[in-house]
Length: 291
Image (cartoon, rainbow, N blue to C red; front, top):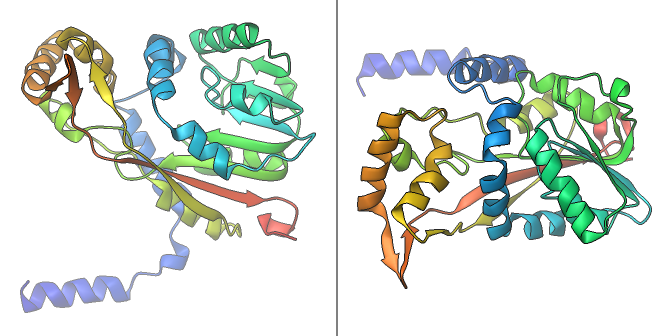
């Protein structure tokens, strides 16, 4: 680095006042830019529902999250973006009741089926989104609220405010660390440029900015991506390339044909550890601080 460049960098750093950064505006700007290319509404999750549910069942995220999440006897839980019951189903045995808020019709149907098959009668399934009027959906405050890998919103402040207004005791958020579950090499192999989402540090800084001293820990998963055939690998992994085209799917197939490793008659895609950040805080004291 030249002397001039170093001096300019020092000047910019010295003039930077991190305490006045608008973390919600940073979120809004980045999310708006990303969503121009990847608008993921209920229809997207309708198409992904079955593959997503199978993939979640293979991992150990649920066990790790449940080790962190503390539900007291008799408490009620609100699960925002519940999908097919990734957490709502196991939480039903710990909580007095669970309200599962989910906009995808297929996800709701899969959750209802799981509840019927498991004889679970204390899960209420609600068709709704972050942006909806929750009181109009008859959603009141719950003892514990959870937003597990579902913080796909344009306005972070809106989402946090809704969680706070519907939390009597504790709120949990699970959000991205780095690239999350996405594979940059795979996406590049399909010919698409990868645009990562903002990760947990923005959420943590926003919470601190509004007076919430959130607890933070991480889950770590060595996700096994194993397929019986190349065709099934292509179908099972194409979700990473939003609205994949026929040409991109051909490129993806060529990439996977070279990247997959054959083991015991199956095809395995080498992966890196996937981490998720779990943040939580209590609403018993002022500004989310513990009393």
